Amino acid sequence: MDGIDISEDDAPEITIISTLLGNGSIDEAIDFLIRDLDELQDTIFKEANTKETLMTVGEKISSGKINKAYMADEHFNLHFTENKLDGKAGSALRLAFVYTYSAIKLKEHSRIIRSWHAVSEARKYIGYCFGLYDPSIHTSINRAQKGGNGKSRKNQEVKEAVIEALLSMKQKKGWKSTSAATDAIIDSVLDSLKSKGNRFANNRDDLIAEIRNMLEHDKEVKAACESPFIVG
Image 1 (cartoon, rainbow, N blue to C red):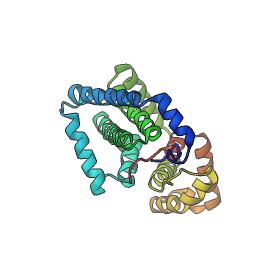
Image 2: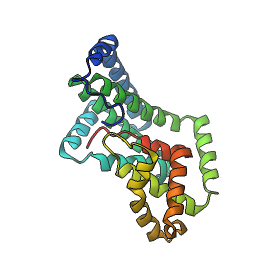
Image 3: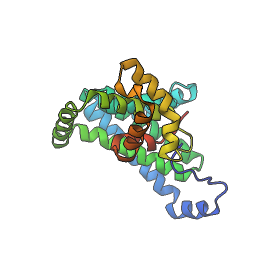
């Protein structure tokens, strides 16, 4: 899993931290995740048996069906491709299940710090699901989407290409800097924009400047750059 990259076997202080947190605390946190997933499954998705779904997720991870590409696709669908409420909620729920399963397995292998990180990610996507069906939040989302429709399509194409490249080319320990991320994804972004006839594809230097600007100031691009992966 990316994000906090601490070797719990090599760092003595991890033993102390783990003792302070206690396995009971992580067990309780995971129990709460499962309860929330039960509620989501029952009240929103009208599906049942969270434990069976978690088992299926585990099988798909073991078989390679859930990997980095799968996670990148779900992240991209959630933020850009999927416009329908149920579709967004479905992607968020699938991500929540992957992170919950990862939290369980990491805890079982005494990777407590990483398990806590997985719990945090699962909570985020569970909260996203609940938020999508909250009337007040849903109104804000609709208003934001309408505002986004007025943006330049060319700039939006750049943003989507950048996020897709960042997620699909994610480094194991994360990007060292915005410059490193830009250098890594520039060719992929150029190819994507050329296929769409985007004006940024005609000037590599302008595109590099635009990508770096997005990495510094655009919340969604920054989130994609910092997004962790647990599987793969």
